[in-house]
Amino acid sequence: MLEKIREGSQGFWAKAILGFVCITFALAGVGSYLNTKAEQPVATVNGTDIGAATFERAYQNERARLESQYGDAFADLASDSGYLKQIKQSVLDRLIAETLFEQTAEKLGLRVSDEQIKQKIVNMREFQLDGKFNNDTYLAILRQAGYQPSSFRDYMRVDMTRQQVVQALLGSNFALPSEAEQVLKLQQQTRDIRYLLVEGKSFADEVSVSDEEVNQYYQSHVTQYDTQEKVSLDYVELKIDDLLDSIDVSDDEVNQYYQDNLTAYQTEGERKVAHILIDFGDDEAAAKTKAEDILNQIKQGADFATLAQENSADIASAEDGGELAWFKKGEMDPAFEDAAFAMNEKGQLSDVVKSSFGFHIIKLIDSKKQVTTPLADIRDDVVAKVKHDKAVTELYSLQQRMAEVAFEVPDNLDEVASVAGKKIQTTELFDRNAAPELFNQPAVLNAVFTDEIIYQGVNSEVQEVGDNHVVVFRMHEHQPVRTRSLEEVSVQITETLKAEKEQQAALTWTQELVAALQNGEDITAKLGEKSVEWQEQKALPRYGSQIAPAISQQAFKMSAKTGENLAAVEVSGNNAALVEVQAINSAAETPADQIAGISQRLESMKSQQAMGAFVEALKNQAEIEVFSTL
Image (cartoon, rainbow, N blue to C red; front, side, top):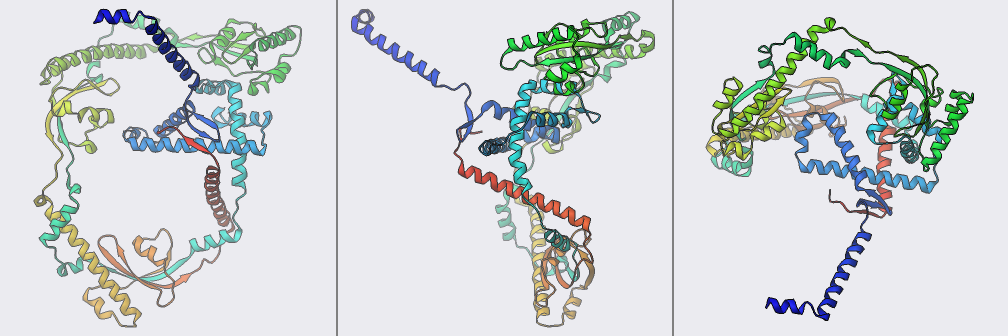
């Protein structure tokens, strides 16, 4: 059969069919290649793509901001996929809104001049030191963010143009003085009230809880009675402080360390230069020609500072004739730095220097030589560093050996303890929310609560719990999650139901008092039955009072008109209260400065509402397609 197949595959029609199939696949492959975009957008807004790279950069920036805001707690938040999805959705919504604003600005013909961009950059706090624009900081931040000066100016142009739409919208909202005054009067308004605080426990003898009610409550809330998974760990801990006392340092080691790290004890040489930057633009060759022409002009006697002001793309230093602040090695672009430190005579000019920013012409203004601190002056510091380094090396060696024996002998920590020269310690039982300080880190807790540690009973890997601080652990005791039985929680449920019934009884009794007062009845005898007395509060403020919040809030919901000035309300602590408004007191005056502050807050609130409505209106009119599922 194989021979027949081989013979058939050599015939004319077999070859024709094979050729047709090959051509079909080739064309399909080329077609898919040609039709594939270089970057798949996550969304399009009226035909404008929001690229995946743009979205990812914005998302990572938002994550960095949240990590800075929440610190270590962000790791726990980030473990929730739903939370991360919300962040991604908010980032995408913001990018869509920005695109809509940009398109609106283009339709309106809005523009931003080069001078406006320049002043905006100079005034940005991110680029300032001691309140003044610093060019080194400016260039360093741009490098870190992956921008060239020209591309950053383009970004600023787009952003500032977009902001014109935003500012026009925000600037169109205002609050009338009468509105602010009315709000201030309401805020400063006080009320004279009296109230009865009726304690729920005074009805304890009147309520009861049946076994059936307890059982029904338990069945309805059974998930509330799940216990937390708990563990107790055996562990061996090793930190660098355990090793330092046993480390000896010789004079030869101190001298060798000093020589090997001599630069650390030197005041580095510095340079102060002026430069003219010609950025690459769209034609790098033309940019280089321009730089060489400017260099020739300077050599022929033209003023360096004037040419810098007229030609330099470094907008900040150009104003100062191209002059930069003092800098050391490692602070500037390598090519720029090499050229600057190659010059030694004041006024010396470099050749045209190409860096990642463009072409430079550099002029040396001044220089400082490096100074070396003698070993005798810093001997104690060097000894401490040598001892620390030797301890780190020893710790690393022990850590490696601990990892090996923890794996080789997985059913106990005896060998690990022997290698580390430490005793085995044991924790109390703990859950994820109440871990001992040593283990209270997201990464470590994730390693603790794994099937491998809990159910297989093996040693953990070496866990870093701090700088030069490690631990190896294993399970000592495990308490799995379980649902507590009805018998275990019946007393707790009974108390909960009893408290609820007591509060309801107190509220019902208080409502009866309200009805009696509205009918003109005397309730003195009823109050005596429960030993309840009226309490008065004159000039109760809307905010910041010392009485129960529920009483204060209810008081400001009612008028002082008879028939509308009485109400019963639940109060925390399983209590109830009867509130009576006796008088409403208006503010004696409304200070002008406070009215101004209220006006600003009202304007801000209206602006935010208008912004939200404007964005929604733009979205409703736009063609928006989202491709990413986030």
